[in-house]
Image: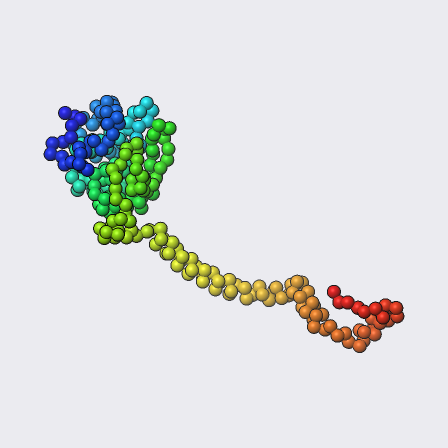
Length: 260
């Protein structure tokens, strides 16, 4: 039967792999035209051709119709390919939608430690993805999609199996601490900025030597020189004092003068 799991498949999380997709969505996939026309006799190898032709990810759209991405996801769960084949799906960098399909299958079927070890490196991929849902098409990014797989409970209208938190795995010693590429990039950037800053300061100092002479010759500099000389010569010379007393009347001579 086209809707049955392959013979000899292992139980995932204690149940049939196809049952990881809710019954309502699974029935809609089985009734869809794409499933009947393109997913009937697919194998783990021939499914690659269909995954390459994908042009979006998403759950259900329109009148609760499943996307081609969901149909192929259910087919992968039905076929249960080997781990080596899934790794080949992930290593195909040029086919981002096939890579997203393999990432979601790994999230739904693999152990928690393997999920973190395999999916976290994929967060280096910042390519754009088309996402289709009930409201139409929208823009998403591959690293955002992987982050949602690791943190959210529902992705592409599929309830994901529960996963142990990374902090718990680190405390139990099952997985090492995660290396943040953002922190490394920030540290590397700070060093470059420091080197660039030291070079710019040395250049500014070397350039500021010649303009400093022109600044001293500017009118503002002359004003500063005059103001400093006047402030230091508070006690006037006898000649200047006599010249001032001649212009001042005797009545004003008696009044104290206040310097402002």
